[in-house]
Image (cartoon, rainbow, N blue to C red; front, side):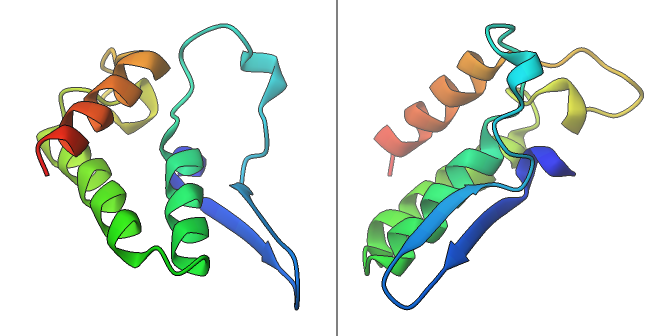
Amino acid sequence: GLGVAPGANVGDEIAVFEPTHGSAPKYAGQNKVNPMAMMLSGVMMLRQLGEVKAADRLEGAIAGVIAEGKNITYDMKHNNAQGVGTSQVADAVIEKLGKT
């Protein structure tokens, strides 16, 4: 879904990386949006900048959090199950990064 879809607009000299859903201002301050699209946009940016090792680490940490299925937002849960907030997802990814 949109919560995990990264995006990039790449020109000859300039590139902009952002989630495909944009900034989603209606959810500002609610701690419920899935931050993975933004993180994966960062992965794309790192690769564009030649920082492949850093991109691989971040992508691996995100994949690990998704695979565990515990620290994911409501949009990634089945049967309308309760998910965690934006901050908890970010903390889980950061924790995984510390282990790689």
